[in-house]
Amino acid sequence: MAYDQNNIFARILRGEIPCNKVYENDHALAFNDISPQMPVHVLVIPKGPYTNLEEFHAGASVEEMGGFIQAVAETAKLSGVTESGYRLVANNGVDAHQEVPHFHMHIFGGRPIAGRMIKAQD
Image (cartoon, rainbow, N blue to C red; front, side, top):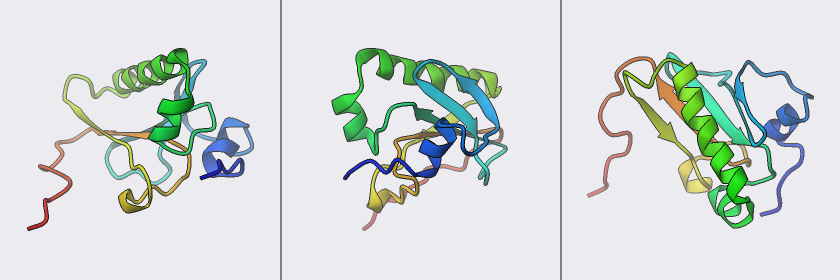
């Protein structure tokens, strides 16, 4: 799938759409979700044009990958959820309901999260 340069995250990265920034480094940007599902709901996106995890893995440098993971960890810390716990989610592709075609990680926390999010089918 070709990367859509006009997806909302690409536009946020270019400064065309504002965001409530939580953290930023050379390789990633973290910001609060505009429709939070938990008291803490932050998105972390790589700055490179990667549609999904496979593209990120295949095309990102070691520095980009490390910078992205560092941003996830630092964002969780800044969001105050490292002590109590948090959930990381990356919806990847149509079956996972990925809404924005730019690889990203959700950080959920701020209250207890009920059990598993996905139930196995019989």
